[in-house]
Image (cartoon, one colour):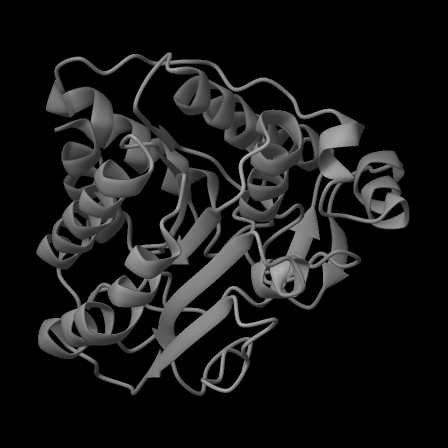
Length: 294
């Protein structure tokens, strides 16, 4: 089992809480699928060969630190491969019509991983890989990545900021890790960031999406919508200082599904990112997935 070490917030208990919550909810019409492992060719869509080799080919016995808060053990490479593989498999499913929407309950998270570097608990950037996979494998012309994790997805932005066929939109708490995601970071016009102040509540969060980001997304007319679904903006989360509730994640999910219905046949792939209070994570994921399943 992938573990970043005793006491680390990105723990196996996170995924256990998510899966237990989803299974206990008895959601109708939900099909469970095992995640396949990504191929190296899929990983190379967003990552350098050197980075892939560092993660997959480093002999490990016990813990291996990649940076001050990103750690691997002997099971981490397999977990990261299956996280990226789940994202690509879900893209296949929604684009080919096997299902309309998919949620990938995966760890480690991915949105801090850059082309060349693992960081911020993240090994491979599943969202960026999935976006490029949709373009290369399914010839889509407009793919959007929406990121409402409390931390800016610096890795995702870095991976896609020169690719006009991919739009990246993010709200995140200002002034915290990784200290990126300023409003004037625009890529080739495809990047839209709204950093939010400490203590941001539901009203301010929803206003940012309603007035700024959702109109940009609607104008882009995405054929596929990917969500970096981090739930650490919840008021109970220990790693940040925003004040959202589970209902806010229901609301943003409904808004995103509506845009996907208008422009992309309802196609949404959501990927679990952050969320470190187990009760809040369980509640928030369930609220999110209920909206996806409607």
